[in-house]
Image (cartoon, rainbow, N blue to C red; front, side, top):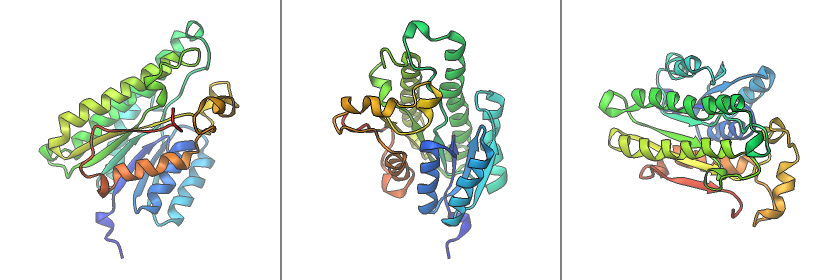
Length: 253
């Protein structure tokens, strides 16, 4: 039997819907115990937790609005209190804001998006590094930031502020990867292209994946499960010499 004290323990924000839920299922199969953070729809969160438990994972849930930075600050400590340690963090939770012209994006909406997409990952990453850093008494660990192909395109006519927030996440990865490599903490990015999740409906364009398919070299949008494998790799032993890297999963875009 697996020694439970040696099982990786991973926090996934936004871990019960879309890409986050696919990551949770994939990591459960890879032998991770999971701390899944979600904002609403508790019934769906319980369903994902049950699926991961059926795959052999110990799963704990935390309901929190990460745009509240005090709530974000508490996540890692709560995970450590429940599991004893944390070895991985996936900064996945995020929103796009409404799809449309840059001139029509309300600044209040953009401010909220930056709190969730940028400031919360900064807070979570700081907390995780303080726990993981071998220079601070930790045992090392790995962080994966979920960015977007939009971070390098600018997303004109679609969601320029969102693309800006994801460009910031790319720099969070690069800076922390280099600063904490010697302290046993690896930090990497996965950048999905258009993927079939509810994020598009939340932004007012539920059919966006199908609408964009013609402009994608592979001729289709991606599926959440196609993102999850890259995250599992980056959190696993095969990626032990990989840090500061961005894996782009965008169908050729």
